[in-house]
Length: 359
Image (cartoon, rainbow, N blue to C red):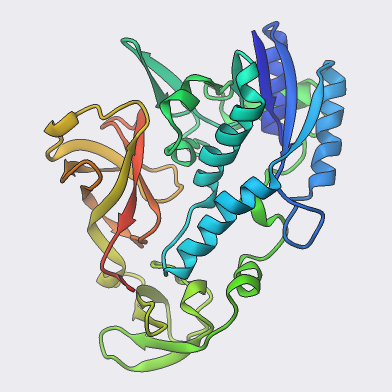
C-alpha cells in the first residue's frame, strides 16, 4: 500500500515507519508544523524536524513538512481559550486529532494515499461490515480517548501499527533498529504549548482578575485567586492555601468566585452522575433509541482505568452516565469517552455538563 505516515520526531512514530517498511509498504512521511518560531509554542519544531529527517533518510522515504499553524490557531487554540473563558475544561488534544491531523491534513494531503498511519496507541476492529475504534494492548499507553471525536470516514482511512505493541516492545524495537531517537524521552503535556507553562499561556491571553476563594460548606473567604480561568473542577494543586488539601468543587464564572472543599476524601469532589451533551458515536449508535441504562465502561480523563456504569439516552444529543463508582473531579467541558462493557470498543464521546459551573 501507499501510506502517508504522520511522524513527530518521537520514538513511537519512528517505529511505525520501521514496521511498515518491513511489511513492504511505500511510505511518504509528513511532519505537521502547528507552531511558529515564537514564544507562542512551536513544540521544539526544529529539533523534531531534524529527527524526522534522519528517520526518513534511514528508511529511504520522501519527507515533507506541512504547515497547519493558522488552521490550528483558528480551530484548536481558539476552542481551548473560548472553553476556558466559559469556566469549562477543554481538551485540545482531542480537537487536534479531529480537526488538524485527521481533518485538514487528510483533506489536503492524506486523501491521496491508501491509508494514513500514526503512532497512536489504538487499534481497529471490524464487526460485520462496520469498523470500530478499539483499544491498544498496552492499557497505560492507550490513546483511544484522544480519538473519540473523529468521524467514521476518518477512522476508516487510519492505521494504528502500534496497537498490538506494549510501549516496552516499541522502545526495544527502536534500540534494535539503531534509530537515532531510540532513547528520546516521550513528549509530555498539551501539544500546542511546547515548553510554555500552561498558566503563563492562559495569563498572556486572558490576563489576571483577582477573585475570592470561598469554602463551600461555610461561605467563608479563605483566599484569593488570579482568575477562575486558571482553575478546573477537581484541582488540588496551585491554590496557595494552607491547611489542605483543598479541592476546587465549584465555580461562579459571573462573579469570578471559586469554591473549595477541604480533605482528601471530601464528598464534594465526587459524583456518580455525568450529564453529556453533543454525543458523538464514531461508527454509529450501537443501541439506537433503546439505550436505557445500558452497561458500558467510560473514562472522564486520560487514565488506564475504565469506570463501569450505565448509559441512558435522553435525546439525540443528550445522554446520562450513572457510574458504579464515585468519580473524582467531574469537570464540565471535558469529554466523557464511552466504551463497551469490556473496555475494548471505543464508541465515541460526549461533552460533560453540570451544575458546578455557574455562568
